[in-house]
Image (cartoon, rainbow over all chains, first blue to last red; front, side):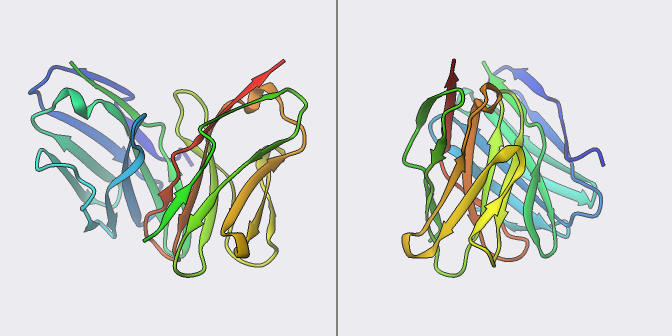
Length: 113
Length: 113
């Protein structure tokens, strides 16, 4: 299995631009989680989906952030417009029903200048 | 509310020395507990997990952890540290099912010769 695949690995963008981060979960997993990692706040849950349905988006910092999961094999996290304080590493993780272990992707390092 | 505390932000040990990383959790029910490791520029990799049964669990790379309910702790140990163990270590807690884990802030391990 290829594991959780995230793209791009690195993204540098200018303030005000739209940024889209992508995630392909492990085949057969029905839960998907988006986390953000910063030095100050550590790993924070942004949003998670069960069976493609958003369950809890209370961690999404602002309306500038949105996430979708159109099918079981793909999810996006979009930031529009981006700001320098959004600079962080964004992780996607997936898991299966009854198996609470989450498998993480390599992350996307986002830098907003 | 669930929470995880890792009291040590940074630990430095000599190669060959023993290691113990501390983790305390707050959780209202029987927790599922995890230790993940993150090497620089990489995603999180599961070291070990505790669901039930024997309170001493073995993981990959020679790591083990002991669940102590009375102390709400799940400390990670290794008898002899190798230079390749230098990384960031995260303790996490979660409920049963497809719900997100809550992570501690992490402990950065440095290994010196």
